[in-house]
Length: 388
Image (cartoon, rainbow, N blue to C red):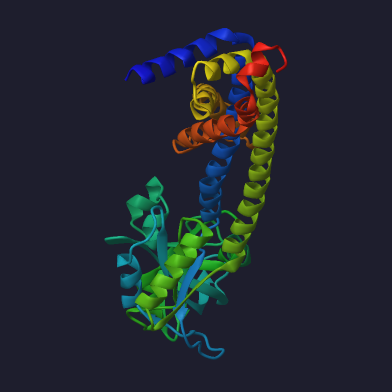
């Protein structure tokens, strides 16, 4: 206990002896911690933000029949029990699935009165524990709610081809069967939906006389590319009768973009840490030169070399702790400002970044204290003779 008290008393005296140089070291460590925390926070935030932005593009996993039929009006189908299995299968948060039945039917509008071939997409959103029909996906306006009309969501190109206006009546005809709905044009999306007419899944099954059948289940899975691949593999084992595959253009693009961003930020972080280490090491070298007499006196009165070095390592660790605590807090605030300035969206503070940045700063401070090892070779006699 007395040795421990004396140890920390000497450490306090070391801080008081050379305040100017130690302040320079503290500033260098704080600046390094700030940049490290800012870059790490941007890197971690980019991972979740990219995943969320790519999910806005929609489907990235498809569950389809294993054997496709020939070129017929109705492709191969799956049983709706597959959709039930997908709905009950554990998925990452913010994931969703849609059951679809696709076919080609004659469409007669109140504007043209002539049958035109069009792709019909029966849809139902599968939510864990429940389902939503196609009509629920779109908010109804007051007139439609009063009339209780079935809605057909008409893509922009299909609406132009049929000369449709909102509220026009559509007749969907297939093999002598017919479904009537009211047109609700949707804005252009620049994908296949622009050429389709969307109706409720049950109505589509009645029209083609395929109750309980679907063409595919389209899933939007949130998560990293590795998490998505793991989900696909697990779901494929759960549904061996279906083909489960991902849309590689989404998952691969997400992985490439994140790897480039992550690689750039990691390289800059390493460069910042290297420069911080060199700056602190240069300052420590000056400190070592100025403390030769102190070390010689300590060794002359019986201080062991390892205890002397332990004093200076404790000093460096405390400097790293102080610089890390202050710098990491400033760095997280800096990352929020950088995200808003550079990317237009403020980065969210990630709690894991703060302790990691503090620990890294402490390690940098300890590594930077390497010049203090030169003090171990000082001879007390040479110090007293003025030769050291």
